[in-house]
Amino acid sequence: MIDLHIHILPSLDDGPEKVEEALEMAAVYVKAGFSRVAATPHWVGGSAWQPSAEKVLKWVADFREALVKQGISLEVGPGMEVAMTMGISKLIQTGQVLTLNESRYVLVEPPFQQLPVGWEQILFEVSAVGYRVLLAHPERCSHLAREPEVIQEMVDTGVGIQANWKSLLGRYGKTIQKTAWSFLEGGLVHVLATDGHRPGDISGEKIQGMKRVLIERLGEERTRLLVEENPGRAWVGEPLVNLSPIKAPGRKKTRRRWFKWR
Image 1 (tube, one colour):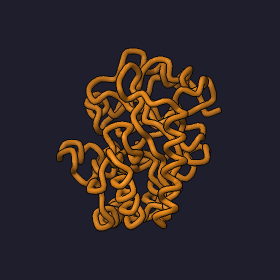
Image 2: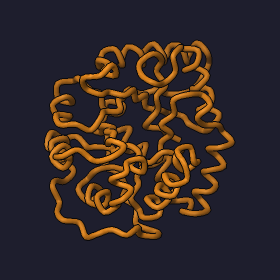
Image 3: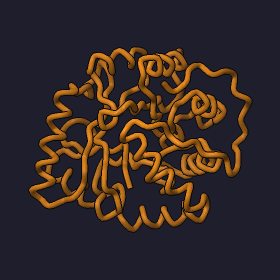
Image 4: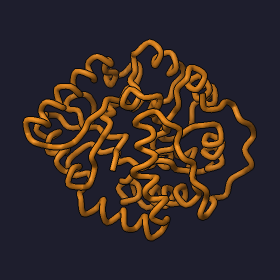
């Protein structure tokens, strides 16, 4: 499996503080069945969480060396979790933020309450410069939880959607857990990722157990798309496969198409 959203680099954000903890985390992920991860430290403009691209790339290179020395067979690619704000397209073009594994996908985190004014323009501008947004954990955003038709509108215009394994596992409470399942059954999710921050966030038993539940509720082919094929497509910058709804959440007809995949 491939994880496109994980806070595994030490001393950069609210992930592990020391290299030893990051290595322990990597070992847990290998046991859980992950072969590749994109290291995605937070990037929030004007805050303490604003690492330079050069710093993240150096940390990735150093961490790869540490993994080899410890005999941990986990491939780590660079990335960032970029807060949704105006100007992301320029930040990508000027190399201030990193895309996922240096592909055409950028992981964007929406606010936990309300989408910012002009969010449509933010997404449009990213597409207009030849990149594509992978939207992180919309089930944790109150606005999107209330209005899943907005997610459908995003999907219709080329945005990829990433839900959290931890949401399905109930780590954020039953309401978010229910919302995440609703999005999955509504065909609104392309990719599952852990959003892991600590070694104890997941375990092989929990991930494999949830994978069995996914297969039971969604089917084997859809589960494979969520945890293997679509993450692999994003890893190399290929278009994601859209999923049809099993059980459609209540949503309105989409208003328009702003852009298309270039």
